[in-house]
Image 1 (tube, helix red, strand yellow):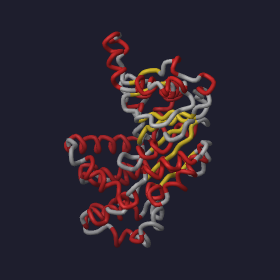
Image 2 (cartoon, one colour):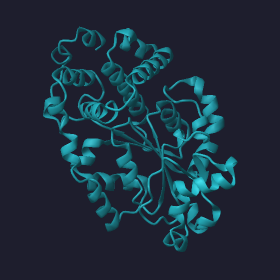
Image 3 (cartoon, one colour):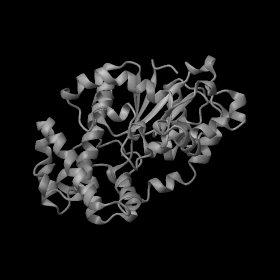
Length: 346
C-alpha cells in the first residue's frame, strides 16, 4: 500500500464517524481501518494520547508516526468493519473463495492464537499471499482515529501525505445520541472522571482554554462534554480550514443529501465514483435525516439551553443556520438560559 497518501477520519463519537468510514469502504480503492489506535499492541496505540495539541508531543510523533501509519495501513484489526465489497488490492480469486473474509475475521485470529499464541494480537498484518501486488501500492488507506486533536493538528502541519476528513454533528444531535446510545449503558462515574481528566490536560497545555473553562470542579457532566467537544472541534478546524488537505463534513449535510455530499468526499479523496457506490450509499442513508432532527423534541429545556450556549460565541455559530432555524440569531445574553455558571463561561 502507498503510505505517501492516506485519509484520517476525525470526529467525536456519536457524530457519524462510522457512517463516514462505511461510505469510503464502498470504494474498491480503499483499505479502511476502524480505530486502529484502539488495538492494544499496535504501533498507533503506542503514540502519545493526542488529547491536546501541544509541542511536547511533537518529537515523539516525528519519530514514531510514519512507521505507525504504514503498519496500520497494511493490517487488519479486531475493530474493523466487515468488508462488503471486492477490493482491488486483494487477489480476486481468493476474495471469491472467501479467504479475505476468513483472514479478516475473528475465527482466523483465534486459530492462529491456538497454533502460535505469541501472534495473537488485536491487529495483524495482511498476509502477502492475499494481496494483488500490482494494485497494493495504489490503495488509499483510510484510518478512523476519532477525536485526537494532537495528532490531527500535527499531521496537517507536518505530513503533506495526510488528508483529514473532519465530521461534526450539531451539538444537540450529538448530546441526544450520547445520552441514549452511550450513557444509558456506560459507567457514568468513569465517564465523568475521564471528562474532567481530559479538560485538565487541555487547561494545563493552553491558558486560553483554561480561562474559558473556569473552575473545572463546578462544571456539570454535560458541560464537561460540551467543553471538550468544542475544544476538539475548533482546534482541528482552525488548523485545517485553509488547508486543501482538510475537508469539513457536517453530519446534517450527509443526512440531508447523502449522495451529493459523498460524491464531494470521493472527489476530494481522488476516488472513483460509480453506480454501485451510489446504490450502497443510498441504502446506508435510510431514515438518517429523520434521526438527525429529533433532538429538539427529546432534550430538556435546560439541555437545549446548553446546546445554544455552546454555539453562541463559537466559530461554529453559523454552521447549522441553514438546517436549524432556531440556530439563527443566537446571542449569549438570551441563550445561556437560567444557568449563571454557563453565562460566566461564555
